[in-house]
Length: 202
Length: 192
Image 1 (cartoon, chains in turn green, cyan):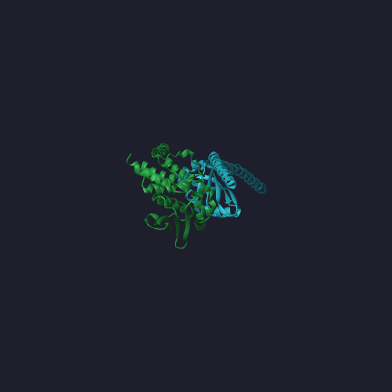
Image 2 (cartoon, each protein chain N blue to C red):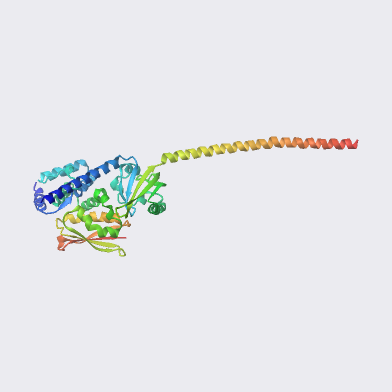
């Protein structure tokens, strides 16, 4: 019970954050739990959320509907605790998300090439979040790297891991290379004014 | 305020329509007995339906993001097909060899159709795959039968040829001998 107290406190803080995410952002993670752990574990997570005073019925989440970002982050923190997952597991979960995303399939027009995807990425961001901003900061085909900046997205450090995992998969979708990497080069939780991600490839 | 309400209602309706559409596509795609893959302009797999999962042995999320060439034996031939699709919009009945998750090689027939967005940009393609193992086996069986029958016929022809050689050769020999006898008889009459 004592262990849950910090989570309850975090929940309060997270629920006060303004901003929403598409239901799909939550559902793709649930799909990953279903795949990696099983249906029973999805129920376990629901029970844990209920126990912590933040009940979410995943079956009732609609992919295109907007939900408080606090829900999504709290769900991620909870599953981390319930399944004893590391940041690496969370990164993998986020990296998995675009693979099962209906939005990705629907918004294929933004992924014609790496450069076009880079330029169109702010529009793509807006399809997923109704707050914060994604800035395609630098693209260098010759040196094989691109830099994205995420502004006004100071929610919780776990989201840096989530964003990195997700961005990496999106880059893997639009690059010909089989070796693509990502690194968070600036972080709001380390005093920077925005989050910055460097994606490079061979 | 009233306008805002109308816009919100319209948005809500559009969202519901979109979700219904998604559900319809998902159900239709799951029902479809034909294996279908969606590929992006870089040749990466974006989606596969249930029939394609069954054919390849991969679950959708195991293969989404991989290059389509990763699951075919003929990698260079695929590059040629790609060029053909861009020129012809769609290509049909291309024979390829699928490499399944279990590393099994399956002959397949592929039909590919180009996808364009509203502005006419190339946004990838749809690929339908059908397993032609049975057809190939049947074809191979037929070819083997034809070969066997051809060999049998060839043997029969050889036999007939041999028979002809024996019978016709014998007759020719008889004619030759008869002529020789006639010649000898003529000589004998002259000597008398």
